Length: 135
Image (tube, rainbow, N blue to C red):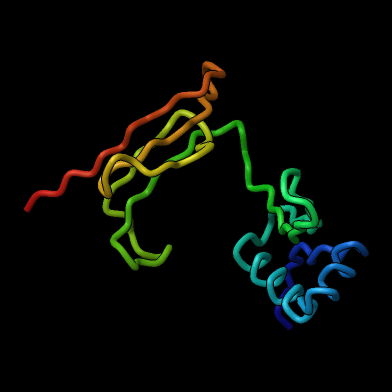
């Protein structure tokens, strides 16, 4: 007999989420989306909630929230060829001194801005990352 490993279960659907999903005919999609989320994030906490837009009246959305933060370690940016999957080795890698908070588009397709929370200083740092290709 092979040993079994325990995996975190899927979150329960809160009543307000189920009511909203029923109104919008979304109930058949909830469990598959949660299952897909669990497959992508097998060990991280998942929370399901209903969120109301603070600016647009009567606009509600179902939010699947995953806590993937580890605020105590360095992070890295990986560059892979277009269309390459996660299993493909990156063509470039950049270690940054803390967790990446945001990535924004740059002035062209070969650049980006990256916001990092530096774990040594406690400061937020913005990096401009550029891509230069040569044969």
